Image (cartoon, rainbow, N blue to C red):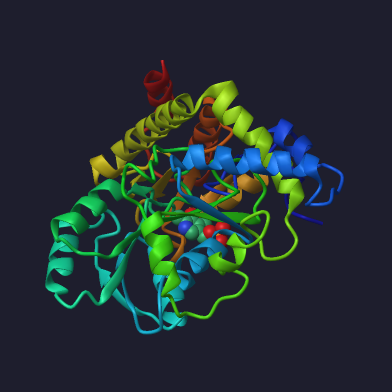
Length: 393
Ligand code: PLP
């Protein structure tokens, strides 16, 4: 017998990804199997690729994969680089480290611009590292646009400016996994050469499909890349009708994507989607900043210019376990929060505020966190929810 009865009611899912899936997208995904070359499906497919390009704000190439974000990460590296090439990784947290580890495992040299996870990378250091690389050993600069582990946004346009100021030919690779469809992202305007995205966050789909936007410059570099690849090979993909997917096309995803694009572009409008994320994020931060008043938990990200509008990481007061708070929220109140990743395990919990989310969902989550802190005796200034309401009103 479990100690606690299973909670009733709908689960409040406040994870930073995967995220809530709108009912209409769930219904759309539950589509009967079709031949992926069926002309009726191809119409849906082509419209989805065109829509995805609009959300990425690109008129260049997009390649899609059956696989989570890691697949698109790997595709971005193996299609653009050769054994022994150097990639410059801008440290932001757990996900920049994971991308760096992948690059090493693939036989690349990794140079890191070290950064305080609470403040983020200094663009002058990025420019200086590129200026020091006279032989142009660095072939790509990798930035995680929104570091999901720390709740920090690093502006890719500033990275592009640093590369250009150093007059360095390196490609700019941006991870948009927890920013796309939530924060502003402009692949072409910001000079991003390859961007990596996934289905399960701002696009509000199940996990399992990912993609890369690729610039014309990157497509040229791709021709000379020598890392082994087959499933991810963009040249193989270009020869296929779908210009993506070496193998069976996951058709169900496209019925879901067509609906999620309809919600994003037609029902709400991409600019309104971004404004909603910013509004909800401000409410979450207002609550957290209020709680911190009485030696309570506080914002992990300490750089006001880089606070993420899709996820907030919250640092627990010394001696209080974030995972205990999360377990109480889940088991007793049916609220699922994100945990701390890597060295932040037990120290940080994360509130995801991206995707299919509104004010009452955010307020419900904040109220539950406040309740859980009271139950567990975690110090905090009472009234965080009022601060959130004030931010929203
Ligand atoms: N990059 C970022 C910023 C992420 O948030 C994640 C996952 O949460 C990943 C990469 C890895 O993606 P996936 O877990 O879909 O493989």
